[in-house]
Image (cartoon, rainbow, N blue to C red; front, side, top):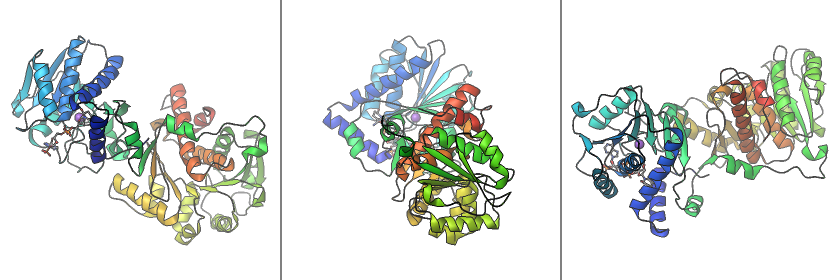
Length: 493
Ligand SMILES: NC(=O)C1=CN([C@@H]2O[C@H](COP(=O)(O)OP(=O)(O)OC[C@H]3O[C@@H](n4cnc5c(N)ncnc54)[C@H](OP(=O)(O)O)[C@@H]3O)[C@@H](O)[C@H]2O)[C@H](O)CC1
Ligand SMILES: [K+]
């Protein structure tokens, strides 16, 4: 799914109005009904709803939503923040329609702000995609009132004060919603880690904007949701055999870190690889043979660390890094790996840390190798960034410069291609921020590469699959109690 910026969304809006055709007022009504459907499915009419509306189209949505909900028997109070003389046409028309049924209250100065009990549900319709500058004065005071109230807050389209596609200032007044019900498309702002508190639990409702136009609009940003992930999955042919699905090699596991190899290997097996060999430090032989009976185990000449490569000829993909350690002999092995590997690879964890300590090696990494840094590992590789938007830009140029597939791990993990395309992932949860979860991902990615998925598809699909398994694990065990092996246990489509 494409992610568009604010001006592209404005054009999309205009295109839909002109070509469907539909009046802008009817489009606002359709968007408002979509919002109402979501709200009614989640909240019954026992709690009072308090609306805070601006005077543009976001405010217009708020007024329309209030009218529809009031007709459905919800208790509705509406405040219009009177911060400007100007108002949009559709705001004015909806104000007139609402006033036929309800008294609208105006907030002209701070003392007009209501005292909230915390029992209400607050609807934030102050500012939407039309935000051009930080919210100040009355708008900022209203935002503060909402944020200070213990009441639940639902933002219409996007939290008021949050830019859709660029960084906010540290002191900007921005609503901190519990939910954002956004129209038609996810917004870039929702993908950015530092915006977490300003997105809340966000979701997208369909308001029938022109799909063809959306698909044709050029953007570097995409969202891998269920529909787009499904398109990447290949069926297992009836006449296939284990050779069809490749032979993965994992270079992982040193003394005291054999669990990483086990998790990585378990995930590799569970994502459909034909055969798996783990090459581990000598001390890991029995551990791996017992923990993963489906895998073959090759042992290093060194008891405690990885120093030498096995013969690489048999393998269709290689994953390296989990539980590797950073000994000089291991670094030597990585240098040899870069020289000898002729199949697609995934580099993770200590393999990345060794790369960041040896920039010459980084330059030699074969094109389209997948690297899977978390933000700290990425910082060690590419340097510091002043904010999360800047980090994303740095990752795009890093992927381009080194011709790598960068999987920047986090909420909405971003998969970045050498051409600068970014695919944000839909699945996963905060329970996955736990030791070993990254090792699981490396196993999945190596498995998909071994099955001859392109590195681009493997990265997108693998990250999606990892997140799905994490979501199932959280459902079964809760986000707090789940551990990385639960992710492996919950794999599968
Ligand atoms: N395509 C869709 O998804 C649809 C979206 N809808 C809703 O429309 C809003 C966008 O509405 P718009 O009128 O473009 O913008 P806003 O309501 O966000 O803002 C209105 C005006 O406010 C001014 N502005 C911007 N920032 C500030 C600020 N910090 N302080 C004060 N005023 C501000 C700005 O005008 P200026 O001329 O003063 O710059 C804005 O134009 C979208 O989010 C949806 O909720 C449709 O209802 C359906 C289709
Ligand atoms: K809003």
